[in-house]
Length: 264
Image (cartoon, rainbow, N blue to C red):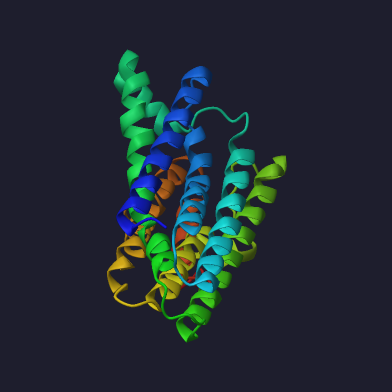
């Protein structure tokens, strides 16, 4: 079996290779949105490379690999279906305009390889959790982690499904999605993503000297709350849906909670 450094090196090389292939495909179609579909698949690739090369406790390795595979494949299929035929994501379109003729090479570094690095750093928690041979039993932190992951997966998967159904109805064009889980959180899918990664961290935390892998869920949390998650999403929606400002006033941004009354 390989050392931890070697395994992590293999994983970095693998996601770089995957993203470079994705970049070539994006050049052919003149659309870099394909990178969204590769996000979940990259973690699946990393988790199974680690599973194959590491000597960690088989029970925990299997647990992490299965949870990440279920999450990653669902996310990739959902994003691929959502983006199919929809054209290039506006945020990438803006970068394409600013970069002009250089975008073909700029996109390799600014979109694909940058996401590969983020993916590898975030996946540290998945790699470390599989590398540890002890404890060789499933403990209470593992169970708590699975519980958090399951709640998160529910919010992310159901939230995405409800939003997809809403958008598929032409009668809802220009309207604000405020039904189902979206009546309690403006971003139930992001809240679900948040819980999924903290759940995976709890599983890894059951192994010795793994507290530092908290960097993984912390990065995810920062991205969702302060970077390309809620801020960027709402910046765009407020411009296109007049009723969204009222929705903001009555609905929790992240953690699901009962809607505020209109006169409060």
